[in-house]
Image 1: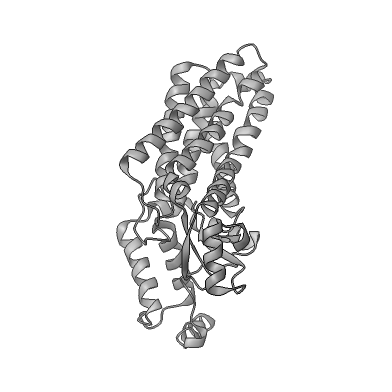
Image 2 (image 1 turned 180 degrees about the vertical axis):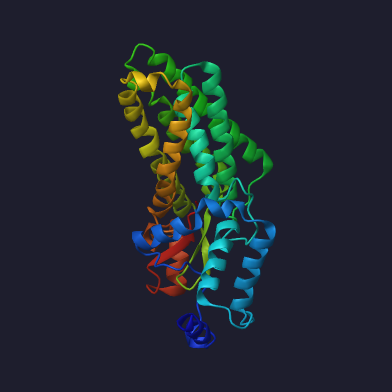
Length: 332
């Protein structure tokens, strides 16, 4: 207790104050990013009520202004930052909808993934669960977009319809082609459909960035312009991250299920198969969501000499060789 109080007293000194505007752990390393995202994707955060969220936001805001309540401890500050970062957009500061938050990825993803893996044999089941999954993904993509790039309702609708259609086409086509294939092969259809849809859904939802560029900054946060190449790099990293989250569950569980189905006792409890796969997906996602988010830095970078010619020349004319890299928020 005395140590905590001492830390609280020290944090009141300007030289020892915490920077709550940045993550707690070093984001230049995979380990630091993994700890950060393991922290803010904690599924328990998805049930925080409005008062808890506003209290956390208020404490973080007041601390930055030097107005925190007397006796505030360092641990209280880090917890407030955790709650705040889990629910408020990093660019706009707006409160995100619950389903689109990264803290809801595990409970939402485990139900959808488990059901896609279990109910993949009939056309109605494939259509429903692929539609449900793409609806969820569209909301997550919209919620975690780069807020500096505006997107219209028409573009949102187009991206949603295109991604859902691509998932359905992939799933139904592959289901038809794998009817005579071994059962294990057919179990991988949901993964292929999800991967294909991610390759469409995310770029479509963020098409404004592809068409008009994403805002890039220098290391001090000064805006330098917009870059389409930076946008494409960020979006491709997000696509890879999202697909990686699903690999252990959607690629590993089919093998496990086929092995378990060799046992008579497991076949006799068919009612439990969906529950088993959903729970297993949840166990994988607890670690795979932060893993996927951690593959690439949130504050992404691109070398100046790889930017568009006009932006590159403008930066060189203003800053010479003083800026070698520019930075941007790649989104989640």
